[in-house]
Length: 293
Image (tube, rainbow, N blue to C red; front, side):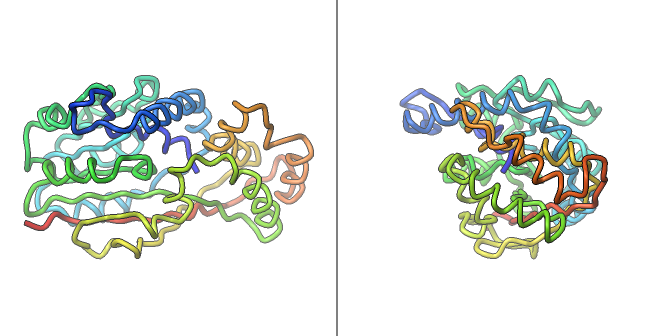
């Protein structure tokens, strides 16, 4: 799982009981707690996580009728927004946590905006310049945290019709070698009791994620597009990958060390030593679709 999920309070949760973004008190507290956990993980995340391939953005840009405005939701350090900006005239990149935006990568066509929990749906529409204006909405490793009906309602208001596209993607695993992967799977079993309940969608690879949009051939509800992300990774980077997960952060808050000295030694041995650089594969998946009139 992933720190970036946590960012995903990205969708704007409002505590005003009269506001349509209102969540249950329990949900709000959960979202705020997760955002705090991930603030603590932000710097580690930057060093441990993969870069999304540039061809993904070319693929998405080819599916929109215009290339004027994009919205990157839950932008975090701006990784997706930075690359989306290579294809769109303007990108508005939002995040609910200011701490995440402090790591954002500057780009002349990207406008980073802190969207606090007090913002309403209508305020978000105003931020984007009105309805029916956004050509591409991207959500990278985050949508599983959202209040999906409310987020999708907002997305449908904002997307250009016809021709606007919503694309959501994530990754949930790393493949190294048969020996290492055996040890990794045992470790992930220990992690499982610390995953937040809302992580089920990403654990399942978005196979059960509701996605009421018309497919453009890049994954559809029930059938996400399977993707691989290759990366050169050191053993230290691999440990950072595990440490940057929400489960590791939650366990640590509860006084549980999932990466004990014994576990680290076993991982190191199966990796091939502390100085070995390996080519690993992050297992990713995507859903993309348009709004039907």
